[in-house]
Image 1: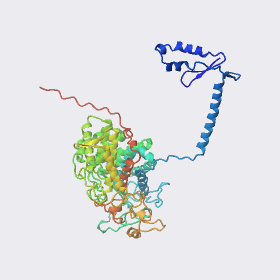
Image 2 (image 1 turned 120 degrees about the horizontal axis):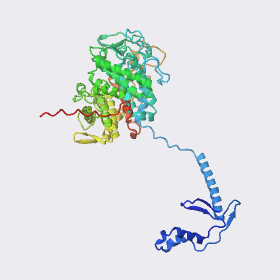
Image 3 (image 1 turned 90 degrees about the horizontal axis):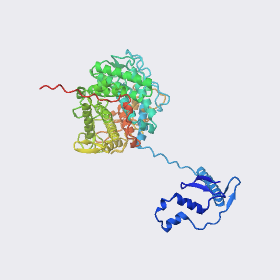
Image 4 (image 1 turned 90 degrees about the vertical axis):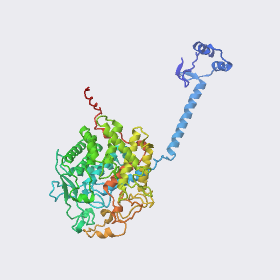
Length: 619
């Protein structure tokens, strides 16, 4: 009998038995099979390949009882098995005993390291009853009775975030901060995930949106009032009644009244709160019940903002001193865009792309602050957000014309950030002066760095290598470089070698204008004026408010680490939100890029309406 296996070269492996064919038979068979190959005369070498050695010795065989095999094959097989077994054992031994050198992950880049810290600032700003793992050792529960004593319809206004170094809760900048954080999560959730911060940042957003839901009747379809501020800080005209600016106390120790301010014609505030809840609803789209609650609240607020027109800071309210809103048209475009993404309802897109509204918002006019995204003016952000729609979904008629305009305007804004153009000055150290040399510049810089990085990622995701500034073509890298230079400046690459992010690097502000951070945790309760000694001392703060980005240097790159000068040393929610967004956009692998589709998950497929037929022809 003969056994066939597979031979490594592809033919049958023949194990010869006693009645095996002789070599002559074999070569004869071969010739029968392969006449085609032999149809041309072969040279000697080729013949030797086919014929093998002329004379072969008689083969010796081994009888194994069940089969009889050639001794040579037997020796080879047994030998190979033994050697293989020995080698396998040896290799296993080596692998088990040699110490492992895990290739470490590359160390996290500076942007990722800074991101971990910048998010901690929000934990330090929490008001109300704190969650178990807030991770800021010197903070405790505070102002848990906000809203209780007020005549307002809102009895429970605990929670939310303190705005800055004081304990006031301003809805207007806080909502903008939450919108920015949500936007950064929607675009870059993979980067948050890679940095291990996705759950943390979602937790921060939820803390903010839960509070916003308390400030109006979020179950109703129409409302006529919202709570816009808790606490007050007016110290003008020698006002010495205890309040959040006159007193210097830990929020945990506050014992004076915290009045609630409401408004009934505040389109800017209503539309910004709507934007914040709509954006958060996309972040939490996997939590269906919560997401729908946020969408409903956003619709109610937006309706209110459209029906009861007015600026929330009009009429000399407190808000006009601290966060004066210049107009509400930009919030209409911004809120409309976010509601369209959250609901897919095209009436919001129609509103956001109405040329008249855009014109009122300043979309076609390049004033000195054109292209500057801030808590007051969302236009530049709204234009980027709507350019996204054109780049990836091209909705066509009737939106195409205005979307193309927004897209062109976005290109112009991006050009204006570059140092080749003189729209904005840059300091000697390289910081862009988006607020034209006025104090507290960093909040505007971080927003621009976010928009620039995001827009460059949009272009790359749309397979576009760059964009035009007049006749010149710039690559997307130029935008990233702009953003990196600005953020690197904030993180310490500046003439003072000072990091403006507390806790980052070796040299950062130690006298941050912040009540909680400046008073030691020593079980002593300091009253309203008792805390002044901590305000006025020259000593560094006893508590480090990790991740706070201070207001920043002056137009000559100068900085004074002085607690009483809030123009240098006060951090804010809105400023930190822009910083977090810019850091996550720049962090990690550039190849990660943006999440192209999540923002569109509620948007129905785009079938452009055909343009109207031409009017009938009349001779």
